[in-house]
Amino acid sequence: MIHWNYATSAFPTYTGLKYNISEDEDDVFFAEISYGKMWRPSSNYTDGNYYGFGIGTQVAGENRWNTIARLDFHRKGIIGFEKNRLDSISLGIGFSFF
Image (cartoon, rainbow, N blue to C red; front, side, top):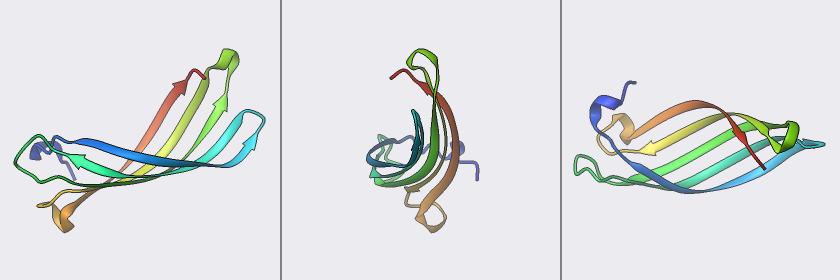
């Protein structure tokens, strides 16, 4: 579902809990869950809830640079959408310095 045409501008604020499933030296495989609120500056939609679940890996590199790859499922409560929610899956690739 393409959702940028609906002007659903929102700011997700949430807290997360991350659990390291396995560790091998400085490499980590993890799962993370998130729960929070979707704050909307627009009056088109009301505020809603935010839920997330993801798995990922962090691979240690040289000089404290770590590579992170993750797959996340997000559920955003938005009144007016089919079943009053917007579900999405995202693939993230990034780096951390510590």
